[in-house]
Image 1 (cartoon, rainbow, N blue to C red):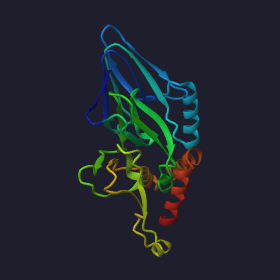
Image 2: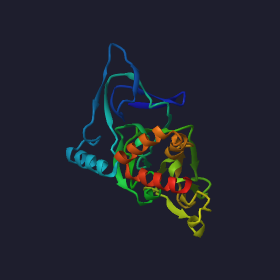
Image 3: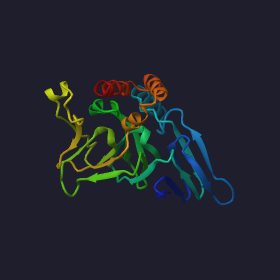
Length: 266
């Protein structure tokens, strides 16, 4: 059995009792300890975490097409051990999913999950309005030990309307993940586009993800996003050219965002 614990906000501690299997972001391992010698081993997954070969191959193809291709590492643990994982100083948040509970998360924000989570990729139309893209990764609780660890750029903010039934409205680019017990719990798109956008008098918050009070959901937000990071470095022309080259080769969605940003700022 595995147990997830956050250490100093920036690291994940995984305690294993007996034999178990863990899936982590490739390269995230930082340290480990076990009695009587090392009793855990790492294996890079070429297809995916699914046990069925056909499902794993189909899942791998889907992830490549949707750009949700997450390099995963399988950690096989044969005995009691403690291992630690982190990713470039990002904050770590742990969820334990109940049976059937669904977590929708960007692949880049996944640090680790247990084999009691069913992993898949699905299309989500509202992603077209943000840098998130047209697909998202989904982790579904399928057992009593369904742990997920996600990453955040900065100390995250959690919003939950399960008890308050309040409407939640957020910037799409700040969203890390959302969790629901009633299906996927996908947000609606709300827009305030008007003639002001055409003359440069928009508020800058033209689109928002919105969950109504009738849809109980927990949303995790990060205070720092890729657009902000890009704005910080855009004054450096060399860094600017490197960023453009990366965007052109990596993600067409980011290119659209770049052109939109330059149109309104240059």
